[in-house]
Image (cartoon, rainbow, N blue to C red; front, top):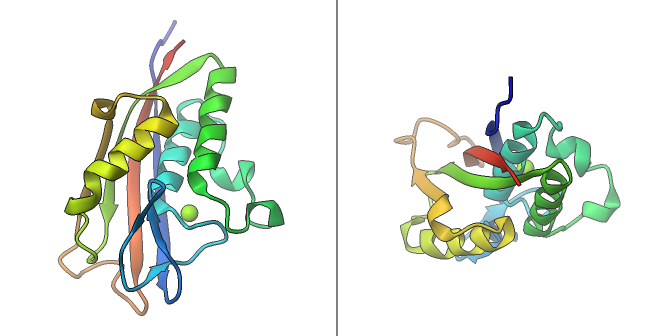
Amino acid sequence: MNIPYRIGIGYDVHRWAEGRDLILGGVRIPHSVGLLGHSDADVLTHAIMDALLGCLALGDIGKHFPDSDEKYRGARSVLLLEHVVQLIGEHGYVPSNVDTVLVAEQPKLSPHIESIRQSLAGYLGLPIDCVSVKATTTEGLLYTGNPGGMACYAVAMVAPK
Ligand code: MG
């Protein structure tokens, strides 16, 4: 049976850290703290990459970009996303659309959603109406420990070229 479209899911969490930038979808968001990680800790882009890799059962970003590799220290995650899109292409597919949910109590993300979508659309090679970024809080119930953090869910679909 030929299944033309394939779907994947991604999930990631990073903790808040003093003295770090908050980068979401390659966009720097003004905030009092940033996210801790080996790379730029772009939790949104990480979840999208895992969703895209999952579409074709290609493993996860830990396999493709191990945090034990000094090459990826401080890496801009959107550039890794470009690699993932290229890899998907080598398997005969292109991203079709992505949908995401960022989960954090702070900061207020609604003023930044459009610029984040625009940024991601460029790296994904998609029109902006195929890149959905949503944000929610957990009413103070999750990811609020000390120091707390931000989580992201992503779903992606890929189509044959
Ligand atoms: Mg991550």
